[in-house]
Image 1 (cartoon, one colour):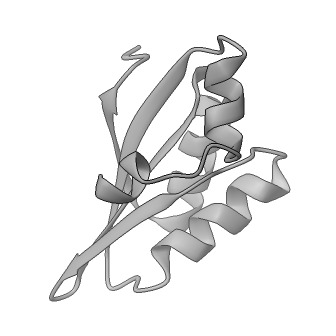
Image 2 (cartoon, helix red, strand yellow):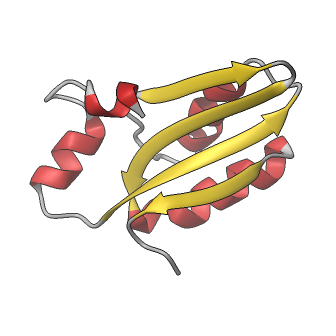
Length: 96
């Protein structure tokens, strides 16, 4: 979460937030996937979703990536998470 707070003003999420786009913060968790953040960024990029800072953490074989995206990108995030065999939790924002 600290990486999200430290994001630069020019990050895609900051631009979207400045334009009034509804945002959500998500946590993606996976087991034995140390490159979770890069795989997540690549999968979202293929769907045209701009991603700013991704916070990452690991404890043993458990990996977590937190990110902020526009709410309209949620379907792409859900598809990326399924493709990676990970789990998704919406931390704040659009809680559909």
